[in-house]
Image (cartoon, rainbow, N blue to C red; front, side, top):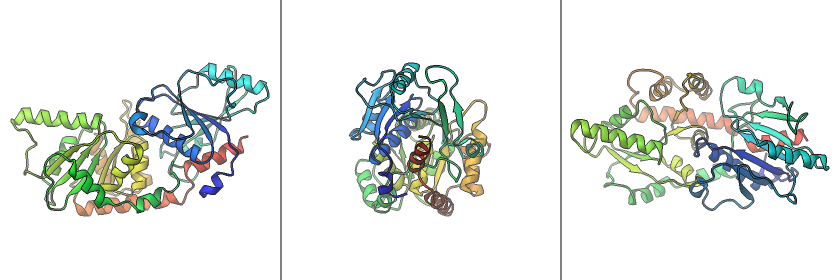
Length: 383
């Protein structure tokens, strides 16, 4: 559906609710959704319990996105809610639902109530997407919530993809971006060709293996761009541990093979460009996985580890959808601690194979409507 057709939907008041567990992922998805809704001509209030990450994620804000503190209520003279969106299993406060119910009793139209679920490639997504969930108790008894599942294929809710994304990607100058990055990088950049790698992760069990592989890479040096937070802490802790054990200030190996740059927090657009500029992207969670798929570069996804092992079949389902080659499956398994052994050696041939796999998957995704287009249509069908 093109940009013009998005404007044909009625202008509703959207209330999007986000309780932050991981401010990179939860809030990142909600902000992208809210921003795209506004660009499609909708009104949006984003109710969030911790909006602090927006200071770096979206420092300029977005005209039309009204960020509100969790637990507060809209004023009586504001538009009634047209669509309620509970994200990632959060529950809207009863006081807010009571406020909505009072507006309905006063003549407002009943809002469409969406339960926006986590992203998964598992078969259950197609089975559950779009199913109703009757509300049996409380001020909205008799209403219906609708399960909305983002997903990677037909029969799902799709993925967030803003208008003009691929045009911006195709117009991106990787060489210029890298030159700007090198001017502010730590150390002296090597003169020969580099492999550029982004690292956005939790604490992967095979991190030491990967850093060691970079230091001994026969193909040449690696520029590793380490994101703030847990990735940076994991790399620094590992280097300090090795330093104390072997009495060196760096990992063992040939000098000038691994150049580590600790990058700052950056807005979403700038994070996307980081992924576009690299030859390999390590990502985690939901938002960065989707952005890495759009980037079309080789990627490794660290799924959030769960104590009950539920992340194993989720990762397997994603790799099955991706049609990942054996080497990429093995790398994922070792990277996330789901298999023993060493990481496969990532050379130029492997990167070429992984890149072709990701680009083929992206092509399949581009044939489908994006999440916003589908969500607008879904809500229109329920009014």
